[in-house]
Length: 215
Image (cartoon, rainbow, N blue to C red; front, side, top):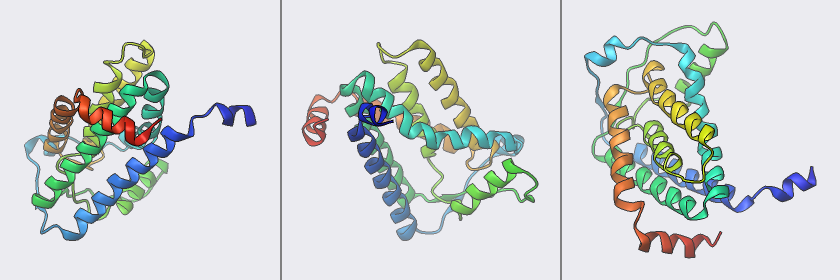
């Protein structure tokens, strides 16, 4: 057990935890100071049925936000710095949008009759009211997983395929669990793409991040 603990890199895990805490702090701060939320959605969302099974990939996102950056760090430290930069700016820009255009999702009501509905109701209880939905951070970060992992030359091909399909499932899960609407998904993906294009190959910012973290 001690040998296993020695092999585990602590610094990237701490960095990831701090990053997520910063994102969470920005999220709750935006909730405190924003105005009245807008109800968004259209006929696409009305055509998408609630499906409790999609709560499983939805929950998996909370595992991947720790597992994916750790894998990136082990394979390519430079790309890990890029991941941190992209994640931060996605969170920052999303929360700026939350401030100027707060939104809310109307969720379905149902009784808890099994473990999956209990898991869904727990998410509903934690994230109540369901505001700060546009853009979806679940979808934006999932798109970041695809952009970073699938462009890594030294990443395992099976892992690439796994991350790609899991990320797509997570995006769909936001719709089928009624945590988000279609425009949240699209805007989240667009946000991730814009941030990736702007910052992923910015050598100055990457160098500053390297000097800051010194991993």
